[in-house]
Amino acid sequence: MGVLNCIGLSCPQPVLMCKEEIEKNSPAELIVIVDNDAAKENVSRFLKNQGYEIGEIINENSTYKIVASATHKAKSGSVQDEDLSLYSCSITPTQRKEKQLVFITSDTIGEGDDILGKKLMINFLKTLPEMGDTLWRIIMLNGGVKLATEEGEALDALKKLEQMGVSILVCGTCLDFFKLLDKKKVGETTNMLDVVTSMQLATKIIKV
Image 1 (tube, rainbow, N blue to C red):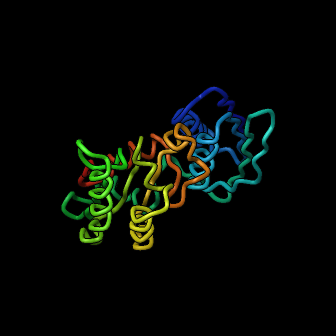
Image 2 (cartoon, rainbow, N blue to C red):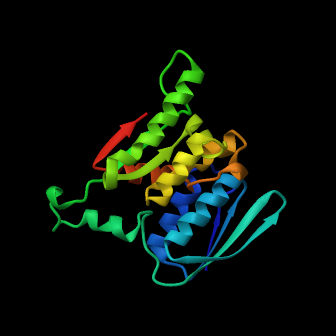
Image 3 (cartoon, one colour):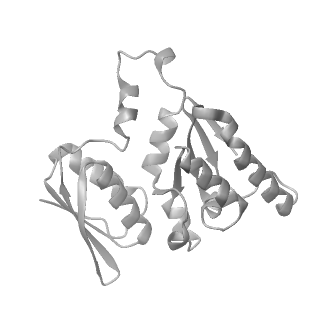
């Protein structure tokens, strides 16, 4: 059984420590102690992606003790099985499926007027389905995470994209900073390790 004390560490350190522990020791059981909601969400999601079942999360004295057990052979890294094939030397760039990543860092588009900027963002999100199945993932950071929390046309457009199969990742540290962690209504809470990995895997990155 492995025990990781991640108290005082912010994203992505707790996830990176879990990744290193799994790669080195593949523990059948792993206990991770964190002291903030964003780390709790990120670590839990990462462990689930690696084949661990979260047995319980114990809240004690403003800390969370995450107790996880391996359900099958633990994987390394934070990518899904379908993404691992991209690292195969037998696959040429022309054989890889196009994966376009949309990087959103604000709830508005452009500078000058925020009301206009919000309208432009709504129109942008509503138009994204025109990209077809090349649209792989949307990552929201900084002010962009507000789009995943506020009821309205932008949130409706994101929910439609998620239903179409588009992966939506929302920065946990950013949600926590804006005190919106419990208000997220679409997508998965993510960490900087997932962000960097996604940028490596994407065939094209569109920054808004």
